[in-house]
Length: 211
Image (cartoon, rainbow, N blue to C red; front, side, top):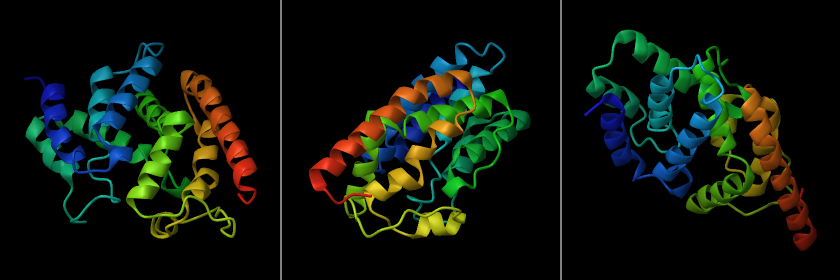
């Protein structure tokens, strides 16, 4: 069994305990996005990208029961990878998270591809479905007209306040298209961003009280 096959087997055991917004189907879609972007980036290391994509959510603090336990480290250790690859993978994972706009710089082409691929899955039709899936799992309101979207948040502020699902569009999802760093990522994000705007316009018409 090669490292990717072994990694996939191990991460599936983790993702099966997450809600539908961050399950293994999410990983499969991000991997597909990453391969589509990487197809026009000949210098990119596909193995590093794939391993980072497979691992990028296993230690997500939204789901961690033990804050000191890093599933990412446990799985990477089991893969017996060279130190250089481990460093690359961890740097990519660190650069993927949005963190309320406090993201780390994606310095390598592999990090740029993985981050764009993950953000593509946060927008468009799938992004809408995932937002309401996560909100439902956490018992959040669909929308709250009295809630003001926040800007310039710290990582702690971004993670701690349980805002309504529609507010999340204004605090994150509608910002992602402009944050894409690969040309293919920018291209793919345009249609998805437009669809979200259309969805919110229709939702605003039907409720008459959205942001």
